[in-house]
Amino acid sequence: MFLNNNLIDDDVLRGWIAQNPLRALARVIARIRNAIGVMNYMNLRSWASPNSRYMNIVNAMLDDLERAEVQWNANHPVDQWVDIRSVFRIWIRNLCQGMVSHADAWAAFAVGSVEAAMPRPLTQPQADLLQAARTLRTALGVSSVNLAAMH
Image (tube, rainbow, N blue to C red):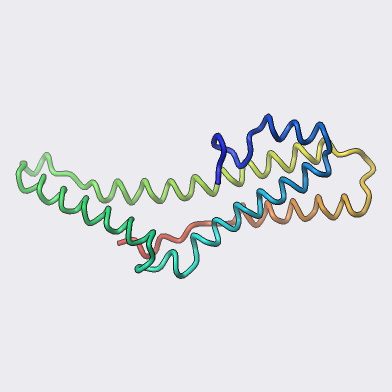
């Protein structure tokens, strides 16, 4: 989903804007829709359910970490015990939240950059396209990834 930690490289975005701001806006809208699609996919019942491939992988990792944790704790004094599963749960939640907030920040930057470069006055189709981009960006900003099936 990301290229160089962005939905599209900033230099590429600037090149698009310089060539044709309206076309750049259409491309930005497509990238924002793709990001929303990824978030929606990640929240599908089939993805976030306890039996999905992703949750099976996450939960298998947690099971492996539990076995390692039990083994370590059985062989070490209480003051050296570890709770690596809690750390992993925090990490995966932060990863998903970071993905959403990063995509939102990029979308705000991209829409703002294109909007600033668009010639004024805007035609009605241009204004409508810009409003669509703002609306999609808002939808992306309130997205989240459901990890309720993680044990």
